[in-house]
Length: 497
Picture (cartoon, rainbow, N blue to C red):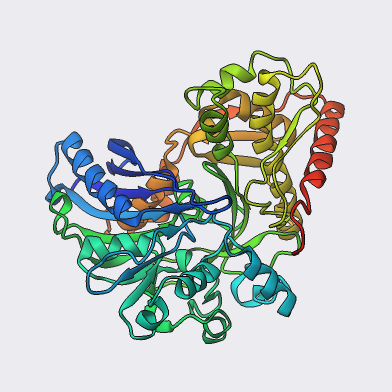
């Protein structure tokens, strides 16, 4: 048996290939960013051809860095930005259009149209999801209606749909068209109970079944890679990025939860084999499914803009040159100076689901400076997380006593301490922080027997850092009260027409 397992982690801003050993330690990592394309306000696109090119680059670089050959890899797992929508030609593999990213807002009018016709929650009983710009369903519909010849091609079976996982597997294997239930559950086209595409949903959105991939479990051998750097290596795991982080954090039991701090923030709680429908603005989603077993489900709170707000301050305002500098700038002041930043650039996701909200900076005075704004940027992530934690506890009836964290922002000590303070509970970071890629590697390794069992994986998980609350309760309540006021001021910014 080979000594290593590989993972492709295709995210919103970059693509990584990571190599892990049997203990879950990182043996190699290569990463490349890709272009963020903004054709007009509210539209966000990626070039799928560039993403595939970056994937080839990082696979070759990581294998060379580790000094190993394809025979040394037991398998490859794939994890990916979810919902992002790609259509491509079955014969040539060429994309029909840029990918519509999960943050893209162009289908806002269609959301209003569907909501008027049957309410925003008309498909929740089957999908666990509200009608929103977030999910793949309306993005596919937009592409079919706006790319010349696309609908005819799709109906004829020559145009394929996939999220990024499906697009990469198709290219890696030379034409295998599959996805897993976690990614499929984010399209708004899969029935959570049957784990299959639903004809009523396909009819409502006008999407031909022929263009959709086959839905498989999250951990099984789908095919073999044909790419030279990893030729012949089994592709044996697929998980949407947030579900992969849940697996990487070994949250295999009902009631266990994690929060990932990346471009957005995503809190997931494993609800076991039970489909729990939210009454407090959360999503119900597939968590993972091992081959031959029923699926596990999760409640999810999705926050659109967290780490992306730091990037925005860096790129659009030039307040910092590199993202980690936000902490240094925020530490130049003692507190936020009464400044609050609600980053509703793409509307607000959980628990509000206000697609017509827009970004607001509130509480500015002559006293305010860039240090206060930097604090407000970081604190926005922690405030939004508290909103989702409260909704999660109300829906599940299970208290989140300790928050497991991962993602790029967990290196920010100021943010993590404030997160603990505003939640009034412990926040922990695992010893291995790259839990998304690790989760994909775990899924692939379980399929191949590289990892013996989920209990063995649980035994590997360990805490790297713990933050404990130190904030006075009165101050905590005051800060959160003002945050709520700022959030309300972001509502209903766009006109109804």
